[in-house]
Length: 62
Image (tube, rainbow, N blue to C red; front, side):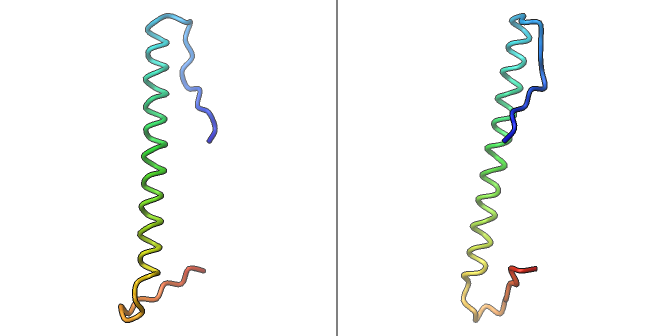
């Protein structure tokens, strides 16, 4: 993932704290997105692995 450099300050303590808080939020959002993708992938795998008697056929090429 590309680095995000959205906040640049003059080096004051407040700007450094703000930049660190911003970066922490970005990292948390990236982590949450990856977790969500993993959960969705597992749901898809479980749906495909369901018994054929369930009556659902998923066309993974669509």
